[in-house]
Image (tube, rainbow, N blue to C red):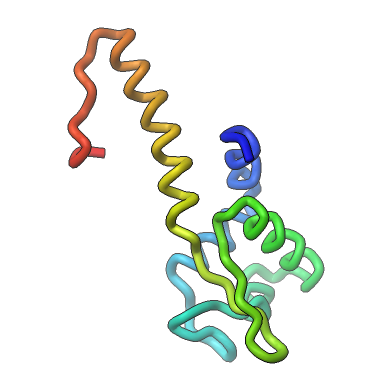
Length: 111
């Protein structure tokens, strides 16, 4: 998947809310420390199950979220590697812009 496709997936407001919830889940009926159930996302987002499922599918296909089926339920977690890949691509743009402007690139610790 290309950078523009990844950014398109991230640009949707509902998907961003899902990612925020997965980053800091509110423990409710089905959420656990090792994942969040889609039913909790439906309640949090006040969206219908098919809509939440569509957004989760897009996040899973893009590699931002992983899904694990456990019995009747599917639990979702963030996939840190994909976020790091996209972040590295964006940092490359910042580095190139700094180079063109004659500004030294920031050290890795500052990024």
